[in-house]
Image (tube, rainbow, N blue to C red):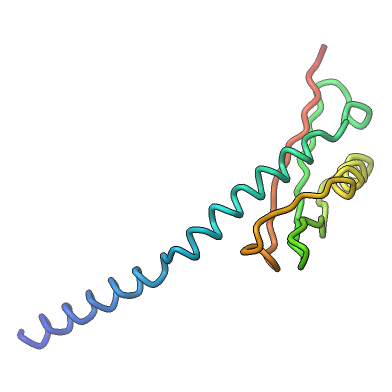
Length: 121
């Protein structure tokens, strides 16, 4: 019985240490910076003029995969969706934008889902 109690205490101590190491100030900073970067990307991509590519009442989902290069700039690595014209418009719009982010995100890859909807008149 005593050995079971010791084993439980040791396992609990190991679990607490692992949780303490998993959440460090560095990881919290990187999470906050990635959230800010995603907001900047969403703001820039949502300014794409999509009226010409969708019919009234139609909706299109686009997924942007972006990487952060050595110059702290966001570069679109892949655009995923079904509407080729809209994907090309988003790609062109994002290539014109120069989004700068914190250097803590260099080499990271971010993904963002965007839903373009044209309302019926």
